Length: 361
Image (cartoon, rainbow, N blue to C red):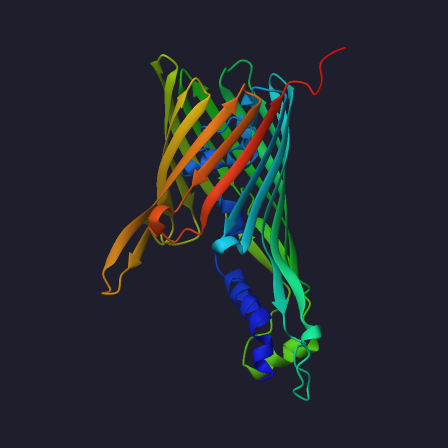
């Protein structure tokens, strides 16, 4: 009966330790930020032109129309069990350069720790139950520069610090670098970003009590040791075109492709060396006041009950409202009809854009 008291924390730790040895590392940084980008199925590498560009492609920060931008986003996964939040602050230094500070958190809070629930004599004491969080955190410091002699061309970089923690059981620090290029001309837009350009590493440290170690030994589980986890580089490519239909109606069409080089993944295009995941997105707006968005992506190959394999995809929808180019409110609805294994559903984001904080006296 004593073993049952360890199920909750040990089950979580076992899943994490197994995942830490696979190629899917720091996957919370692959989710995306901002309801506009998520509603268009992550096709923002070429389109990003606000403070969220620090995530999608830091080169896009130079296209911020106002000097100051603040963005906030909230999403919930697993029926609200997991929280996904993002905040960003952008500052345009001059007409050719900009900086941004971005924070991302994905976490599950108030997890019950029952390791001390039952003592050695088999007595149950509910007062011994404590709670902990399993959270992934990342901070991006980004810089972008546009070339005056080549209109429409900009480059950018994001240095990121990652802190991941599972209560008092384990934590890690990581560091990485994203590099991006954007070019836009006459409504055409193109973007390329090398995510984790130098490979992002996480140095893990484990702090397990003697009781937890004893249960691992008695159940035949491997006791985790301090180690290094690597995230391999990924190449993100996208392009888009904005079309003006007249009378204030506009349309933006985008396509993107994510390339990974860490072996075969469950992507639409895959091999033992390279895998590619395509995305398609579209946005229609009226005078930039209101916008409707849609996108498809996350192509997966799954087996049904008969063992037959089929390809599924994720359909996203979104809307946006822009108030005098100062306040933008965006909403995205993803995983429509549960036709894929995506884990998020509702995303709301807010952006505030200002040239100055107060009027000159």
